[in-house]
Length: 278
Image (tube, rainbow, N blue to C red):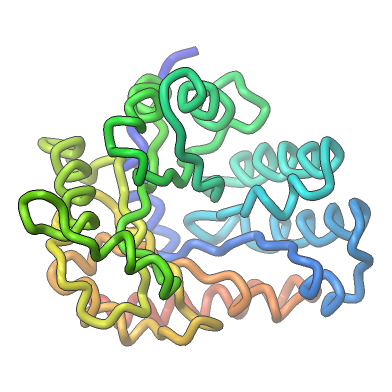
């Protein structure tokens, strides 16, 4: 199979045409209940199909959280495979929220699962954890380059516990998060219009206190239920705000199971983000 156009270029086009928004597909038990669904594979399938059918033809990125599918075993993973295929067919980019992090052949196997084009779970990008050392991600970075996919690497996350690792200082005195961001910038050097190695930086952080100019996309969880708003984005991301991809899950999903409600919520957020980052 020939490689796709690089993920960074495809994402830039999707953000410019469909709007800068990533919507999570997070079918946790309480949300299934809120939708009037049972917490089983049938409920999972109905929930996921509704979100994909409502949003995949209009939002830039859909982000399924793999754990909520994996908890149902092979039948849950089968639902995830179908969702990825159908979302991509409808024009959305799929970011698999798996947060994988390992070394050597194991990292290579994760890369093949999510970033090899003939894999049933092939996604446009995947989230990764670099805190076994950025170099441990090399198999995924190499596989993404081969297939035209991307990766989003955890840098400064929105959960408060993350700071004890991410804000710790390395041998040179810089926060570990900054060291990771520097690695990402190096991977993206010379890419146009946007590199394919992105960073995950929480929208709830206030002033991030690091250099976010990595020539790559910045996935920004925390909009909505976690307390951040689109208006907060310029203060967190500064000059890099044009490359921000805000991520929201419950803020849109709570408007289901009505498909029109899901669409309206997503499009409203797109308008708010565009106004905030203009």
